[in-house]
Image 1 (tube, rainbow, N blue to C red):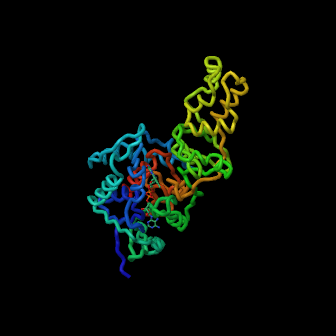
Image 2 (cartoon, rainbow, N blue to C red):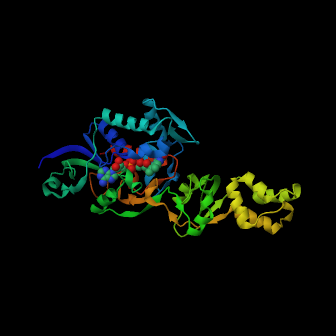
Length: 405
Ligand code: FDA
């Protein structure tokens, strides 16, 4: 059996893996990146509607969900959004700030992927695609190696032979979008080495409606409205989109990270207004005007029509009692929807949960109990909000590990 030897093997040629590879390569390490896909960085290419929202200038630990909320602090501090912007600036990438802090490629996510691949090339990294990983063996337990006091050695059995390395980095992401190459491989490796894997679920994902609601809102498919979605103490004011399956758009994707199945969501359909005060004033100033007409000017017409019909809100403002104004105001500002579920990993942007960060060093990303084994990126139990935070985590964790492998 021929065994090829490198300093570092990285499994996963995605965002975090490529960043880690270039960082380690520049330190003079021999680095081999393995991926079973036929292309590197597939998720980068499909992200941000093909233009990749590659960072968020406001990224801070509060934008990340994790059972261990302190874990992300160190890496995010050591590699900031500005550090990534400096990198893309050196390559002359054109980018735009769509909403405050959110940076997207001006033309195509391909430009960003090209930068990462160029960095890897300059750093002498080898990227080997179409490679299936069959098995990982830790030859640390080999008594000879242990007695020598040498660093642990990992053997990776692949479809193209066996590779040995001192440092093995698991950068194979989460479960979202299996058609793009996502697998649970990283979790299996974690379990193989005795690490805890926290329950996973789809995040940044559209929510589906109960069958009766699906029917009620079927005609609203394609309607988008600025709303505030709220669950427990968390809320987001962003656009919401009705789809033929349920609810989507940034306001829904954001809250999906926090929503727990079986519970209702509160949606404020007119978040910028004091509805009660406005209706009370209108009853006095324009008694003959109708609620229906007013509502179609405040929210999308089709949505207004459905609400008016369902709630029998026809008639002039003069007919509105104080109690009725209270109830209309409550309905519009605290519209309760009980989702049926999520669309799942098929469309989710991220995976919540994952490898328990308690077992991993927040400085080096090395597993505390397994020298030479590292986990970075989305496979870890760290998930960002929508808005470029997840890529910032990939860059920051990849960079941090790249300095220690
Ligand atoms: P990533 O998923 O990038 O890479 C993992 C790699 O491992 C893949 O190349 C895969 O093929 C490989 N792999 C998996 N299993 C393997 C196995 N068994 N053997 C070998 N290789 C294996 N974030 C953001 O900040 N801004 C955005 O605009 C978007 N937009 C977006 C859109 C869509 C549709 C999705 C699905 C996701 C986003 N994201 C995002 C999230 C972002 O893409 C994600 O968080 C990062 O890509 C995670 O980087 P990783 O390196 O951890 O995994």
